[in-house]
Image (tube, rainbow, N blue to C red; front, side, top):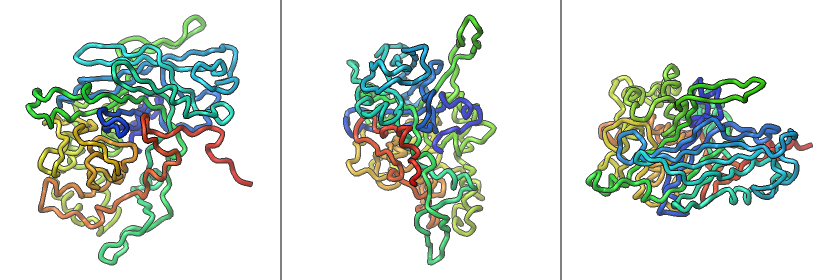
Length: 465
């Protein structure tokens, strides 16, 4: 999965678990960048009576690095509070919720939004309301309108949303974690030889599940560094992004007098930049450590990027199919292509008209060249499909990051740094066989882009008699 339950400790703390991060130049507002971070993964829509929500004791942040040092230059911080309208009711709502101030809605969340830049904190909004969870057609019959009411344009230039959305990630978990099995729709043949067996159609394991999203749309002028800091307007347009969740170090459990309280400094318990980084690159023994560190410390994990375990598994799982990749693995030559994609960005000169390199510091960040305009006809394979506005140049909600990552690990990107290497014929066709079409809730063409969350009455679908 992208980053759902990717480390042992955070798997026990879903309210602080970052599952997906998106960063892209906004197609609905091309003078801005959209940043979306998802938390509280794997939500079954029928979640009552205690419906899913953000943690009041968690600090959620989206960070932007615009000088390439792996430390944040701009941070958007979301802090939540929960209010109960009727302390004597067990119900989430006692009637239809038609507006964000409905008297029928019993448990509401609000948030304070703070922008941190140049060491200064500036509160942009004090008490913005989240929409309710999508309970069902009687409780929340006009959910899209509630989400619209919870989308705010601030006087500082940002647009912001925080609340429940449909999970837009797509992956065949049952196949991938059964020793890397792939279930493509069509069998793949190379030189007349069948190399993959079709074992049924792939299944999107996270379809009809929800997440909680924090989303902000920021004018480009508020995330870019001035050109003279780099000496190049091209470099000034490149940013790195990641999200993190933090908790205070001490929790005091309540008794008959006091409620539970938290105290002490904030400490990071979760982070996410590139999809799948902690999931399939960082070894099990270091996953929890990785979640506590800033991107500037990722040189510690460079060897796992340069010699990824998954690259060695492909030739073993599919004997005779990945001969060139197998030879590359056995040479122990570091994968400079993967290091560039994941840790430094792609330097100029490797791909015509493109770079998202942030410098020498190795850091897992979702890098985005904001000078590249949105594509009116996006290719789901992003840069590998010739669409420079897609992953790994940032990440759009419809990008097929699993297939892109698998193909890169299989060797498709090696020729960028080694012209003598020829990728195996199968490398460019590796896929779990899913796309954005396998997400039941359609993506939106405007902020906040992720689809309307699934309601608990209709999901899962009722069995037919």
